[in-house]
Amino acid sequence: MFTLYYATHTCSLASHIALLDAGAPYELKRIDFGKKEQQSPAYLAVNPKGRVPAMVTPRGILTETPAMLAFIAQSFPDARLAPVNDPFAFAELQSFNSYLCSVLHVAHAHRMRGYRWADEPSSFADMQRKAPQSVGACFDLIESRMLKGPWVMGDSYTVADPYLFTLAQWLEDDGVDPARIPQVMAHRSRMAEWPNVKKAIAEEFAD
Image 1 (cartoon, helix red, strand yellow):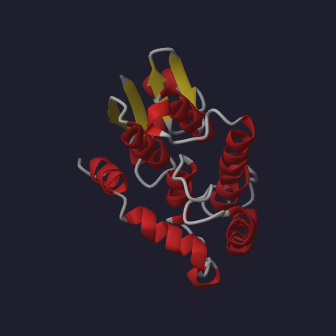
Image 2: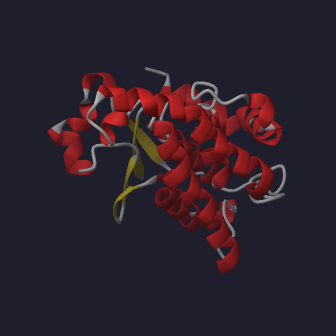
């Protein structure tokens, strides 16, 4: 059994979808950011970073979406969510997911979490103005150089697909014009019709 700590409208959705894709047994525990539950002693005992997602597994607790997605894919190889028997192809998938985590998501976070990097309100405003450019540049690169086919890695669906879908849901709020990235938008539309995507979203908003 896996326990996924999540919050709505966050990147935890990617791991939630992957658990469904893998056919993994899991339960959900919602963290309410409005009540600052991510800073509660109970949650900090699970994840001292005070962020989501976190996943309790029989072997311990995992954080960071790329690591969690890789673990799910490797733990359920029959689901074929990653090229686990091809070291180079698996590294390519990890490279894509790492880019989403360390570059795109960070660029997105500058729009509303500038306090992580600065103290002056004027700095926050500057980061917000920059977000459409910095986030847009990330999606431009994904559009032109990183998408390999109908799915992120080409013809085969992998754990990179729910991750891209999750972050692509925020691009309009970040000020990115969807018309400039038609392949990303086609991927997002395709994923939105994926049964496990619909199920994960319904479960997260069931309360």
